[in-house]
Image (cartoon, rainbow, N blue to C red; front, side, top):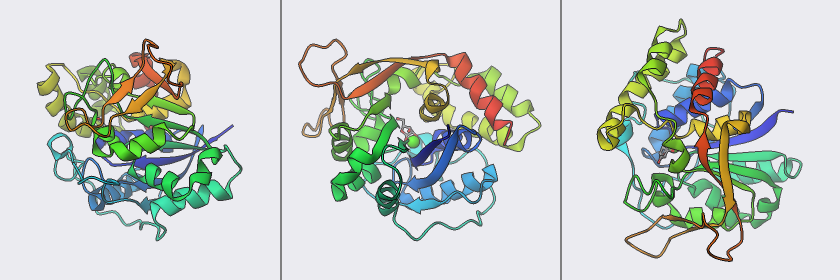
Length: 311
Ligand code: RIB
Ligand code: CA
């Protein structure tokens, strides 16, 4: 049966691949794409989401503008990774599709209230500001969400924006705390798993040689954003973070993890945004997340290529 999903996103090249993967996959019904400030400011994440949907050909996918800053913090962006536009690496045409007039937070609330309970999965790929704001504004929706599959956090892989925190959680730790305390079933794709899906020359070359413009665009995006991580980590490729969320929905058997307690640091200046994961069960804190830490990387990249070719 098709899974109804809402993708919440801050595109970002890796978000873009995740969105394309979702739009190319018959298992998923993308009810809407809600944009949030993160990798780049909201105006750019909206523009990028419009370009990505137009590139996919799925121009009827509703796109919504969400929060332009975290719930209680100044915005931190990541142009150093994604470039000034957030989609550096290739120049796409000016998008024609328009965004919806409803605010993303209201779209999430209204859609959950209007749909059968537990029939929609939320797929956050960026800071959790829209999701946290929706849960704060309408606590009743928590019981109506089927599950949340998100990219964010880190434990053994430590942080990528500070020594302690992964970017999505760091940007809006208060929103993350609301999500992780919501009681909603959580599947978390942290750096512990995304650092095991490093792009590689073979994959990029395969994409480049496809007679498929979308594959060629993804190759160009990858070549751009991997330059930062290869230098930082000294690896051949860069982690392709966000498509892990969508790949999990399509084929969860690609992944493995452990159901544990995860709490969010919101008070400390030094460790703000850290996902404190009780991996060894040393506390009696209640289990609230499936924390993924392993993946069949070959199967992951094969799935992405196979699906993108179909767009
Ligand atoms: O830390 C990686 C995450 O931050 C990814 O979602 C990337 O797109 C950025 O949002
Ligand atoms: Ca993202």
